Image 1 (spheres, rainbow, N blue to C red):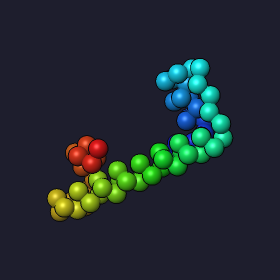
Image 2 (cartoon, rainbow, N blue to C red):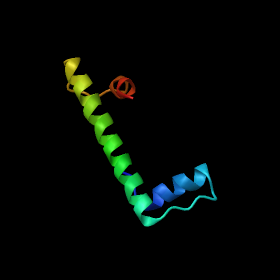
Image 3 (tube, rainbow, N blue to C red):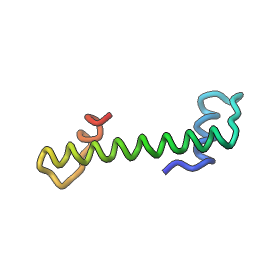
Image 4 (cartoon, rainbow, N blue to C red):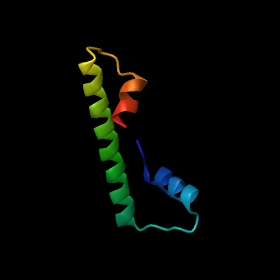
Length: 64
């Protein structure tokens, strides 16, 4: 979902003077992936709890 180039773009949006090394980039990408997986998993569980097979915005909002 997030690649190194997009990560660098996001970092520059926050602070154009910040530079990160390869190890930091990899850690940030891993954390972003884990966060997205967690939100999607929780959101799906909430949709199931509502007895729905459709994931809705309200499920994601509640998970966040």
